[in-house]
Structure formats: structure tokens, C-alpha cells
Image (cartoon, rainbow over all chains, first blue to last red; front, side, top):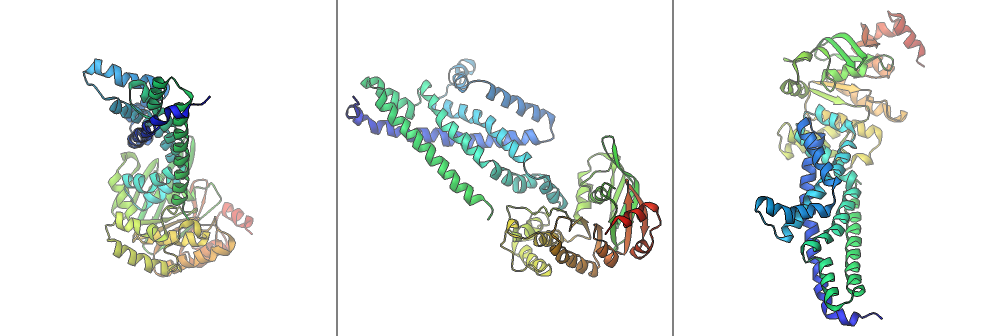
Length: 217
Length: 244
């Protein structure tokens, strides 16, 4: 009843999607981290305007579906501005903007979790504000929220399957293409599913190693 | 050296300091004692402006901070530059080794090279009896060791004055002495010190001047000898009676 033999020639095609999915995930995570760090700084900073901006941004990106955001950037943006993005660019941009919102909340909580005595000790040593943030607070904050950050990356990896809707040839889209061609659904989706699962497992175990390395002895 | 004029501090409706005046001369060792909630720590933290007074002015050297004039970041820096501080809970940087804790400030703030800063750090570690611990992380140290590192970290910035905010209050009893010994050594080397403490024997032995505070005011400004013989105020007598 299973026909893996029929899709066997297409399996390498599906597996190549792993690299595409990883590309989406890793580039978007980097974008999300940079954006998230900037937004988190706005949220803990003194400027009310920046606080409002960051809070509004986060509220909108967390309050609407990711698929809608993807549609806005891939379909609506070109008609509004004349600027056309490839599915790849649109995917990366959307995922970065979206994860930036989530990561900023994670980092904000991490910053708030650092003992305020750390800041006072740094002030008493006359360390300038930006160095206190960069060298004293953020390293401790990041370490505190590493598990939540890994969660966010895992979510992003799985949600990146949404680019298949706008034609990005990631793991998900490739499985669907094979399915449509062979009129077989279970087999290609199972292959893609295994790939996602293995990627997530690899990512979480990598994070555990990193966590152990970062932990102060 | 230090001059606080008419310092008041309120947290909302609660006033913790009432018009406090205090002058500290070079090489004085001033010990602040009093019941908890009397404003000792707030007064101490006002000196390096970790606590910003609601009214009054703080002068350290020739830098003057006026409470009514807004942020004055330059003044804050000029004041903090001359002052080192040691906290009850150490506040060492946990993600840095002992050596990094001692060299970060000198390199990043004073502009020393790493080699210079490390050479000075080793000398300071030797001075506080921890020359075998440069590579250790704060988590691996006992409370007494952490506090000695914290003192060395403050000294690495070459301050003119050292502030101590209950430096032995979170230590196990057997570790109090090693920290007090370091402070005694500092006192002998003529460091100007302002110390909030509950260690009466230390106050008696080392202080050149003793202040008794209660309810946000300095009630007695005297010598330890006179104070422990017979305090002038009823409240200080009651305070001493309650001590074991």
C-alpha cells in the first residue's frame, strides 16, 4: 500500500529543500536577532517615542497572522510601491520582521531579569551606559533567555514552510510538488516531515551544547 | 574631600533623608551605624549618586552635583571617578573571570593597556590574598573571597575614597574577618573610607569618626570611643542596648 518506490527518484529533490529551508531560517534568525535587539533597546530605553514605536510594532506583528504578513509583503507591497521582491526575499523579510517582534520581547524579559546590582556596580566603576549594556547586561540577558531564543528559532524553522504558498521552493513546497506529480501524498509528506523533525532535534541539541558552553563554570 | 549639603531624599511619600549635612576630610574613616531603615545606605549611595538626592548638593573634590539642576552626566562621572564602592551582595560580573572583573574598568574606562591592567590586577589580588584565583569565576568563590575581589575591583580604578555598604552583612560569620582585615589594611594605608556596617568591634577599632543615624537624620557625630562609652542621645543608647 505504500509506494516509496514511485517517489524514490524524487527524494533527492525533496532533500535539497532542507538547504533552502535552513537558508530561510538562518538568515531570518540573524535579521530577527538584530531587529529584536534594537527593539528591545527601544523598550528599555528612556525615550517614550521609541518605547511606543517598539510596543506598537510588536503588537501588530504578534497580533496578525504570519501568512497575512507574507501576503502583504509579497503581493500587496509591489502594487503599493512598484517594488517587486522574489519569493526568497519576501520570505526572509517577512520572517525577519516577524521574529524581530518576538525576539524583542524575549530579550526585554532577559534584560529585566539581570540583577539591578550589576548596573549599579558598573555605574560605580564609571562605565559608560552603552558599554554597560553591551558588555555587562546583554551577555547575561542573552544567557538567561537562551532556551526561549531556541524555541523561537524552532518556531521559525517550522513556520518557514509558509513560503511554499508564495512559491519558495523549500522543503514543504518540494514535497507538495512531488505529491501533485505522482498523486501520492503520504510518502513525500512523510519524507519532508522526517526532515523537519530531524532539523528541530539537531537544533535543540546544538542549543544544549551551546548552553553548557556559555554557562559560567 | 566630600561635602553633602542639605541632602533630602524621598521615595514617593516616604522621606528617608532629612536635610543631612556631612563633610568628610581626606584620610578620615567614617563609620555610619544605626537601625535598619535609618537612611545609612541611602546616604552612602548619595555620595556617588547611585541615589539621586531630591534636594541639596553633593560635592566631591571640585565636582558639585545640585539636585535641582537635572541630569548633569559630566558631574556624575567626575564624582564617580574619585569614588570606589563595595556592595553588600558583591555584584561581581558573573560572566567574567576574576582577572576580567579587575581589568575591565581600567581598560575600558581609564584607557590602560591589557598588560598594564593585568599587572595591576595581579598586584591587587596579592594584596587581598587571592593571587591564586585570577582565572576563577565568581560562582566558584566563597562569599569572603567574592567580597575581597569586589574590593580589589574598586581599588583598580584608583579611587580617592572608598564606600562600603554593609560589606560583611551577607557573609557567613567565619568569613567576616578576612574581609575586615582587608579593610583594616586599607585604613592603615590612609584610604579615605565611609563605611555602613553592623560590625561594632570594627567601628570601635578602625573608625576615626562615628555617625549614628536614625529616621533619616544624623543624630550623633562623634568618636567611637565616646560613643561606645556613653552615647549622647536616648535613641543611640536604646540602639546599643539592643545589641548583643
